[in-house]
Image (cartoon, rainbow, N blue to C red):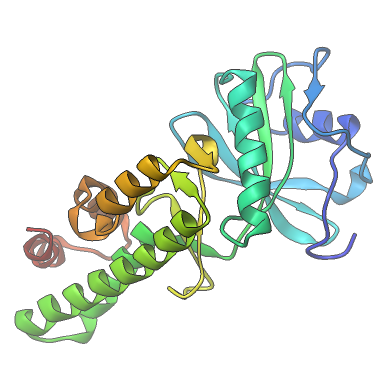
Length: 254
């Protein structure tokens, strides 16, 4: 298998993979594959690690012959099948335009659902901002300089997010949950952003919805409550951050 090449996952591989996951059902007698797929060599794939826990289930990294280039999203409770199918189709449409990571496959197993995505080398925009602010605190010796640096970081992130938003809207694509935790900064560059969590995306959106989202989301890094929630929690979770640093960050937040 070549790195970056499209991958297809068959029943045997799926059963083996989810048997290694803590959220896996005991069997997949009633498995439904969204895409008809071919089996991979069982000896070349494995779950690498659990990356995190979302509101709907766990997110895992796994490796095949070409490398650890894949993410599997395991839904704890199955959404309506049509909603999973829509997320897969949305991912295909947006990835073809370079707006999101690729989606490779999806399946249902008992009362669980799983979707496999391309693993991108990057972090959420919330994490990017938090890490940049921590570095700014360490780099500058005065609070005035730090606050100026924070605003530059937030301003650059807002400009980049707006550019991504306008690119999507110009193609009649609306992401109804467009926020700093659903934007990936690829390769640590604000010039390369991708959206994730595509279950609430509208492709071929009408002009009224496009106008509404364009107005409400255009300054979301500044105005969205996500700034006060996701980025704040990312700062709190960053190793080495102490009370003095949080006091400095709180001034930027307010």
